[in-house]
Length: 308
Image 1 (cartoon, rainbow, N blue to C red):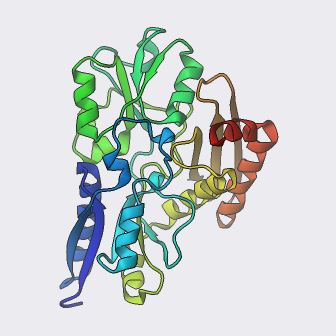
Image 2: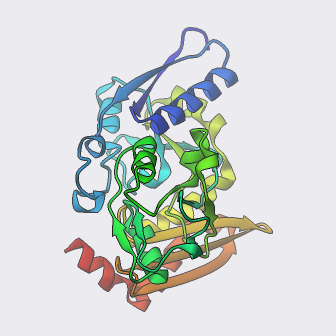
C-alpha cells in the first residue's frame, strides 16, 4: 500500500473533522504505508445558519458539495454522519462502509435542571430537529421550542449564555468531541426515539473505484450496517430526511432485529408508533413494513402537510 493517498472530503465543523480524522487514523493503522489527506469543504448547511434546516430543505444540505468533490475527482471518499445522508445517492457514488455505532441516544443538556422531568411546563428548549421537537412537545405541550443551529460549541455557548433552559443534542457528537461531561441526561429511546442512522459514521465513495472499495470493507461493522439498513429502508419508504419528524431505531437482540419507528406532527399532538421483530437477513423488509404500519395509521397525512 506504499505511496497510496486517499483524499477525504469533509465539512469544516469540529465534529465533521473529528469523524474524518478518525477514519484517516483507522485506515493508516490498518494499511501501513497508506497516507490520507483531508479535503475541507463548506456545505450549504454550514452557510445558512439563520433558518431552521426544515425550512431550507434539510435533505443533503451537508453532503452535496462533498459528493461533487468525489465526482469531480478532488476527493476519493467522504465521511458523513449517517443521519445526514439522503436515501438516494448521485449516479456513480454509493455507501461503502458504516462504522461501529457510537451512543445513539439524544442528550438532554442543561445548566439549570438535572433531568427532562424537572423542566417547567413552559421551558425554553433549543433544538434544530422536528423529530426531537415532536417528541418533546408530546410531553411538554406548553414548552417553547427555539431553533438551535451552528456547531456543537456554538450551541453549548448559547445555552451557557442563558438563551435556553435546556438543549437537545446527539450524545455521540458530545462524546466524540470529549464533552461527555456536558450530557446532563441520556434520553432513553422510549422518551426520544433517535433519528435513522444516529450515532453511525458512513463512508461514501465512487462505485467504480475498486481499490478504495476493497480498502473500506475493512472498516465496515456488519451489525451497525444491518440496523442502519433497516432504518434507512423505513426512511426511504416514508420519503423522509433528517429534518422531518421521523424516528427509526433498530437493535440486534438474540440474533433478531428489533426495530421501532415513529412519525409525529411538529406540535406533538399526533404521534404514530410501530415496531417489528424479524430475521437479520430481512432488515430492509422490516424497515419497509414499519413504514407501511405508520402510513396505515395516518402518517402520510402528517408528511404531506410538511412537504406541501
